[in-house]
Length: 398
Ligand SMILES: Cc1ncc(COP(=O)(O)O)c(C=O)c1O
Image 1: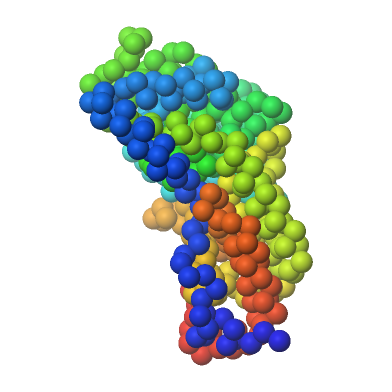
Image 2 (image 1 turned 90 degrees about the vertical axis):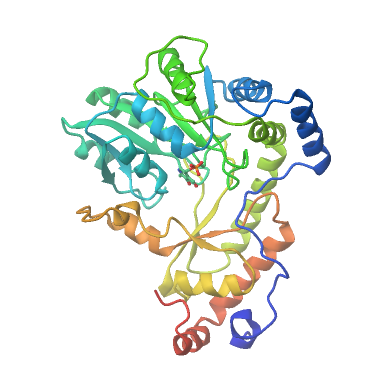
């Protein structure tokens, strides 16, 4: 029988010698990395729309089947640029179960966020609520595609068209995903992706704006560089340093070449989690919905404390002690980060206090997944004694 003594939280040696990262953290081989950087040194050119940056944009356009892929320093700055280039005004509707970046981009653009709740089954924006929130001050809907799944992009497109508002997407988690065979990057007026190290395609830091709108693309290309680089003349009222360097582009080019292998590795690990977690009551794995193809880049699980026996935060404390980098999803809904927010979003509040993110990606092995699932199963079995010991020591108490 498992007892508290079997857990690192109460003195046992940790299950892993070194931390198992949350993911995705893909590193190409040192030889390829060196060869790419030798090229940068030989050309003696670091940044400003260099050859690797141009190559990356072309490769992305081909891979995604989109007319324009505009690479940028990170997604947050890209979201700011898009809000400005789309000439948004007044209010923008977006889900609160999300990273803070989208809200910050609105704040930088002088726009007011209107937070919408999410559908608990998909974790994506609740379309019925969006339609109720549209009024004359709303200029756009900012859809968010979470966890390798997508929101109902077609229903949102219809709603936006019928209501005369613009539509764009924060697709940080959805690189490579497809809806009915059409890759993410082709929906709304623009889609913005993040190439942060936590995503399946990374540029260390970086991001990309995808659009099939020539006029918008021309503006964004001028806006991206404070020096105003863009082959098509376009008038913009602001520029920013949103450039992606050659070093970032080199990493992303290698990641793009290896996308299929990384996606397949994720899918295998995801299926393993699915099979193992189905045996433990109180843990509900998020399964990417709305996609004909997923990158499976995130493992997100909702915990029913009543069934599993432990609270989300106590489980995180237990896993961290075992050197498993488990995390909450977005900590709190972003509406909670806005002072004096009046938004009532029960589903967002529930998900953001009960969901946990588990490791997946290039640095995680199948053996590690099995070991993590074993810890979870044992934690469930021993939950009563773990709770008794943890309460004494105030572990996992918010
Ligand atoms: C859903 C979502 N949107 C936007 C961002 C911001 O991306 P970046 O770090 O590239 O600015 C993140 C970062 O994790 C994210 O998870």
